Amino acid sequence: MKVIPTALAGAVLIEPDRFGDNRGFFSETYNRQRLAEIGIDMEFVQDNHSRSTEKGTVRGMHWQAPPKAQAKLVRVVRGAILDVIVDVRRASPTFGRHVAVELSADNWRQLFVPIGFAHGFCTLTDEVEVIYKVTDTYSPVHEGGFLWNDPALGLPWPVDASAATLSAKDKLLPLFADASIPAFT
Image (cartoon, rainbow, N blue to C red; front, side):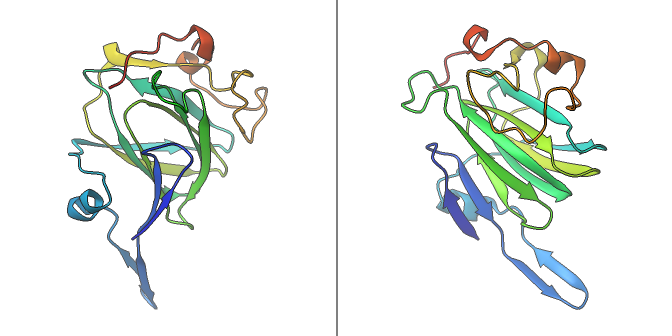
């Protein structure tokens, strides 16, 4: 397993080993002990599977507030996404800064998103499937977020707002400056 730090403390890219032959490949995509050895020592309690049919589908920017805050381990098993995270920890020196990485079935990278980060992605291909582990169960009363294309943040989305496919809920999220960002510890 290769670990690649990002510019935001705690968020890392992980490249699991893949062993291939004429049959295909084998990869250990999750090993709690190995992750603990690199500082990701937490219990994942739920797996989520997202499927998007069209290129240009945007999901985000979301977080879940304490006491139901979630860390995530995100990977793509079909297609490709631009995965974007924004530090929403008010006490952090990188508050409001972002990292954007391509995750795909081809590059086999995973992104670890710590608690205190907003998360979203845009599909780069048709027929995309994303699987992610989370450290707490979904709680609609604790969810929050901000508008995916808030110009104040300058997030590098690969799709124009007029061409993006979003949920009705994501279209109504507030600007970053107006979002009710909780205290993350």
